[in-house]
Length: 294
Image (cartoon, rainbow, N blue to C red):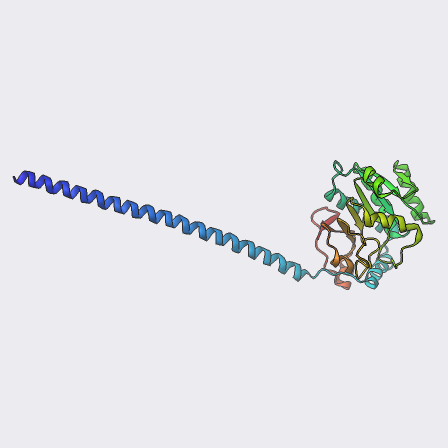
């Protein structure tokens, strides 16, 4: 009798042990699951905090850098200092500016998708930048076509136009219509007017300005979107809005009103002392890049 009673007690004890182990296992499993849930929540919160911190850091860097936007007088004075104090020649700066424009265009509009480029050039330095840009675009695999309605009768501009001719770049004499431009080109480069522009638009340039205002093609503007005030930006609601703005030397005040997709800085030639004089606070160009996105 004692034997069976002992066996019964051992069975009960075994059941209790099993139940206790099961209970502990379930509790442990619940603990593990809860721990994983808490760990995931903490990890998610950490990632969110990291993103916020990174964004705040980027914002503080942008604010701390205080990139200078030049008014018209400052832009003119910077150029005069480059010519007079630092002994740069116009063609020297124009070559570097036009080259940086071509590089910015290549970054935003690759040649395999935007091969056919209409380059619209004005009569001044902005137009000269456009002529240089067209030549470099041709070397990069694009097929640029020049529209140069009023060539400047000076050796510098005549030589730039001649170089384009010898590069087998076509020049057209009539401004294309909106329809023909859409059929013939993938991109338009606006190199008409710079920071010395004063409205109204002269008669020779009315057709091309209207094309820029009404076309659905992407537009890359050199330094100042043509027709904009250098400080106030758009003068009318119908004024063009380029997809790409390439600010040269330093951005002008009108660039604060730019709402397009890409804003690049080009013209990697500003001496450190000149930067300090005008407190330009230009960002550092990466590596050997000719331009950088702002």
